[in-house]
Image: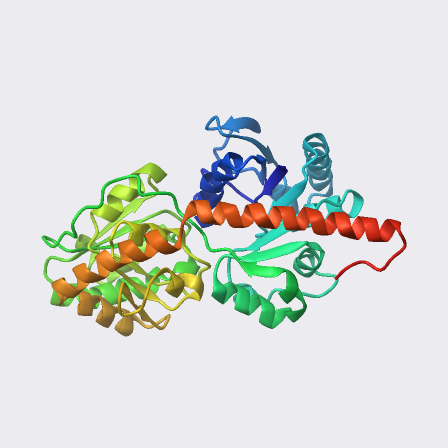
Length: 387
């Protein structure tokens, strides 16, 4: 089957969706699919058309820029280019991961040349006030897709609370990760290291973690915090660390190569997240796979990446005192922390298989194509379409 993966950005723009796509496409190809990717321009990413890592064909279209710049000519050129790419590839199914304006191009194409679609929701978007109305892009795309998936049960519950009519075609497909690329190392205690990995953006709430760490650091003279990732708030967070008097205890690495991240996990004692909302963060799965216990806020599907009280601890978002208390609870109990890490490794290995994720999508592609074909046959015969 020919499958078009459609994202609004791809590597080197690092994120959970991008990482999942890079790993999932080769798995789908192993199942016999011809998978190619369509995405927007990413700064520093060239050329526009290439074979990505000798694995799959990738097209980049200047589609987001014209939308943000309100350029009708640019949007028309992007639409024409996208139409040509889809027509030339002629996919059996489109797997779209909507995150913004790309939905407009998708809906324009579907209006003229509809393709069976699987749509994956990667987050609980309630904080954005998503419009599910018949004239809204998100609502139209969800209604038109043959199959809808969410990456966590929490995201699926939110989606169905907002749009109950989607229930018959909506399921959860948990993100999966490949086998660990490095051997798991013991938790370091001299000094203990707290690790945070992600985009330094408002959603991730480093403004909550840094004050929490200030409390932790005041009680542990050697503990360090390592912040891995870049983003628009990086310099602001560096300044906050200085203001809190912990700059000498916090290491900001900026962005690092994806293949360097596993070593960072192995150098950590505890992995922590402080987000307001998440889907099912890949970093949390990778940390657990490498035997790192986790202290996290109860943000979307994050709590599904651990077993509270067995592989990590969960606190309410936007509460530096609660986050500090949970971190101190583990730092003060080495035996329990190491037990949590061992349990995390077992839990992630058992529950978040990349091959299982690919097999789930393989089934959904077949269902989407069969349903679209059934609807076409019914329409041609003048019968009511199946719902």
